[in-house]
Image (tube, rainbow, N blue to C red; front, side, top):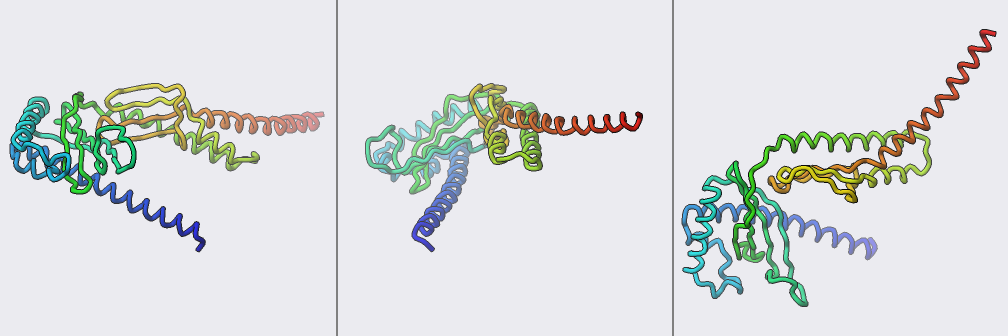
Length: 272
């Protein structure tokens, strides 16, 4: 095995292991957040403190009594606005690595910022939680100012049917190109896969939107479903697929017309 192949194999292996480790950590962060919130609701502030990274250098001088008072205020806001029966969904994670140079923000290195959506079946909100990657404990916890009504998902899934139809249409056109006698078919495939623009999208919370110069690659659709806030269907108008569908139909009709004329001429000769 050449040196280049060995290096590529090492990079691939490290990437896979790092990705799997990050996914596992993300699941732990969600579970820890849920445990922290349920403990907070029960007013077990000592347990809440145990779930926090008090040994981290940024938290070593923290006044525990002041911290418990802050947790009490967070609890009151949570219960007054959303109650005590909550469901949780992971929205997003942002990893902060150690680096040399000037910091662009105040986020400590080797931490992960996690956004957790929660709801009480009627209204939803977002927890913003900063985790220490070494201890897997909470460095900072806050409730964002997001509070929205939990949407009905009926229109969301109905819109998904339109998106699926776009994907099926592009697949059909690709098959027709493959079965045709066109040259440089790979260029036609690229046109079908890439030229899906403009984009129409439907978000469960924000509703319908239109982006003129936004492309949807591959089969022309996009789908994301993590919590209500990040549930989105999107599809691009299949300009590439429509163009080659039209060209193939035109080519097929052009091939049929001479056959019809030939049959008509044969019939006229027989009559004469």
